Length: 315
Image (cartoon, rainbow, N blue to C red):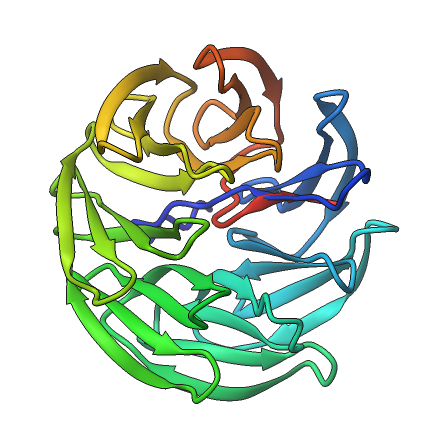
């Protein structure tokens, strides 16, 4: 059974210099994690996991992949060198989006849709170490490595909660569009972008004072959002129009519209900002976009229900 929760999943893309990159795709209906070789643009492995995988995050320092299962109340750990499961962490509730602490501290943050909270887990002990209250039905989650702030999109309170990753405590709360879903931070930490599903907008927020800079018009039902590593382009996946809109981050103007698959969910980029990968939930495909031409160059067939909420490309 597909768990929608009004949230979109993201793909996970990460890489080290001279290392091969891989995309890790969570297929919710098939209960699999599919590993895609970025160089070959083809499937290289598949890992069977618990029911309904959705959110994804990579720990490149420890070669670990973390996957949420909202229906089961668990997070799966996978060794990315062997593609073998390392076990499960029981969080309870409905774990949805997930983000590894980029500082190297061995902790992982998980949005819990059911308990209106962010759950902090220790992967070494496989235990929950803290539960932080946020808004109603938190969906997307992102961390800025520079400011050490955690950004949480609260679907049913129309807000973005800002948490301090080190305290941890609530730092601020920002009004967004209606039904915020995904959130991403620019590479320099100066902007936060939040999709609003029911408003068909993207809220652009200052990373300095958390004031709204601008509200961008998007397509119908914008879910996924991501910024290229070179900070030049903002990509927004619109489920209602089955396309991706591209914005110039300098002027915040739309420059392209790219047709992808049915119900696009999540977006990730290669580290060189040459390619974008988009999960298409209902057409069971992964679209590969050439960023220079802003055109789809390949569709890769995926197991049923590809979502991958979060950054889904990595080593």
